[in-house]
Amino acid sequence: MPQPILVAVEAGVQTITLNRPERLNAFNPEMLGLLREALARAGDDGAVRAVLLTGAGRGFCAGQDLSERDVGGDAAIDLSVTIESLYNPLLRRMHALPKPIVCAVNGVAAGAGANVALACDLVLAARSASFIQAFARIGLVPDSGGTWVLPRLVGRARAAGLALLGDKLAAENAASWGLIWKAVDDDKLMDEAGALARGLAAGPTRAYGLIKRALDAAENNTLDAQLELERDLQRKAGLTEDFREGVAAFMEKRKPNFKGR
Ligand code: LHQ
Image (cartoon, rainbow, N blue to C red; front, side, top):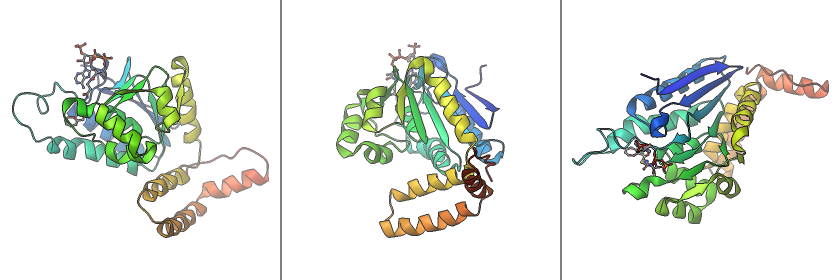
């Protein structure tokens, strides 16, 4: 049986490839569990300083595998069990990971697949890729953080359009709307995403983790609370070796050699 996700570590980057191409990498429970475990290892392993998430084949991820027993079928099913046990822990782990996650969206990202992509810190998409909030098409509500992230990224009006209509949003539009970092030519996607991830893996990892925390907290904080948080996080950043190296390198007019400490 082929592995539903592939994991490789090189040059400080843990690359995770969703690998069920015959189903456009739709998620099943095993795959979600393995993805969560891979992210846990990325968090624990000091040699990993950035994660790159992508999909095998022509799609990125078509969301939940709708042919799975615990989702499809005739009987009424309590989907909250799947959400609580599989998706929410994954999304929480992605946000809590104190290392940057780059997403290379190589093709269609639908349903939970779209929202897992949007939970990454820097999202690049191939020009031929698209994002679909497919949920309402099958009578569901966007999950995997979709209703949280969409209005924050693109505003209520566009979030409502995406969620209610479930239309395909092309990568270029996603970029111009501010939903993702950028759209790139299909044949450049993996080179660009790889270079970005390797660059981050050579960066001040601790500061990156603190930046993620600050941006997440900003979603709900008052200005006062955020100023206090910035003070506390800057204290932590200022105590890192990488900060001392960054300043030394600036003064000596050379490239910094960050160690992630
Ligand atoms: C699929 C899927 C798929 C199985 C393509 N499942 N096979 C959370 C928790 C609990 C419950 C439910 O949901 C959730 C969260 C969610 O993610 S809900 C949203 C689930 N996803 C969708 O509704 C998207 C369904 N897929 C599509 O709309 C299309 O496949 C898209 C627009 C993604 C791509 O369209 P095409 O490029 O035309 O490809 P295709 O439809 O021909 O798909 C290729 C194959 O992949 C095909 O199999 P086949 O054997 O006919 O070649 C599809 O059946 C299969 N596939 N998505 N989610």
